[in-house]
Every structure is written in C-alpha cells, then in structure tokens.
Length: 169
Image (cartoon, rainbow, N blue to C red):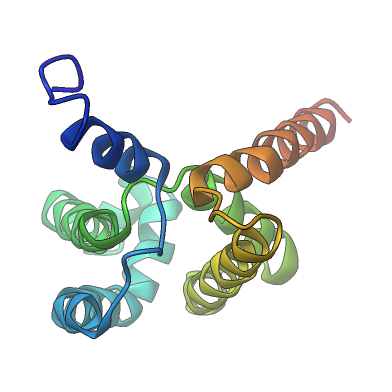
C-alpha cells in the first residue's frame, strides 16, 4: 500500500501511522475507544483467574474442569480487540506490549489478578511519559514508535538476558 500511495498526500500519513502518534488525538477518538476497551478490558479483568489456570498448562486446566479451547479463544479475542482499538486510533506503537508485561511481572509476580491491572496502568503511564517526551524533545512531534523502540529494544534484550541467566542458574 505504501508503494501505491500518493507520495504527496497519503504516503506521509501512512508512514506516520505506522510509527504511531497521539498527534491527531481528539475527543471523538476517545469515544471510539471507550466501548471496545471498556468491554474487552473489563472482561479480561474478570477472567484473571481463568488466565492463571491456563498458565498452569493445558492438562492441569482440563483436570480442574476448565474448557481450555473456548477460554483460550475468548482471552485471545479480547486481547485482539484491545490492541485493534488502540492501533486504529493511534497507529502501531511497538514494544509496549512486549516489554511492559514483563516489567509488571517482575514487580508483582505471575498472578494475573495483580499482573493485569498493573500491566494496564504501567503501560498507560509509560506511554503518557513517552508522549510527553516526544512533544518536548523537538519542535515537531517525534513519532512514539521511534521512542518506544529506543527504550524497548534494549530493555527487552536485558530482560531476555536476565531470564536466560536465571534458567541456567
């Protein structure tokens, strides 16, 4: 689509959307987000203990009486709704979904009753800080995807290294 796009009008907006930004944020977009995020996020929070059981493994979850496939599909669908709503409004902002849950897990452990709310709040707070940084570093707003990649890639490498080191030792 980038190749076929009009280079004067459409291509810059496509590239800017791919890098992610809150530059075009307004109240109409917030209204667009409220319903999908409220419903999907609320349902995910209600399914926290199911996610804990799923994390024990498929066999253990079945032994405990859980219908694994429907619950797994529901959780994945709800996660897709949350991500799709955000990406539709602000574009693709990378690394947040990879790094923040790992940081939250380091802070509160693997219990999803605490992990999900902490991940939601930590991710939201982090992206607000990154947005503030993007607006203050330059006269022109820096796309958020660039800054999150600058923070996220090294942090993810450190987390991966620590995880590998813990598994060996």
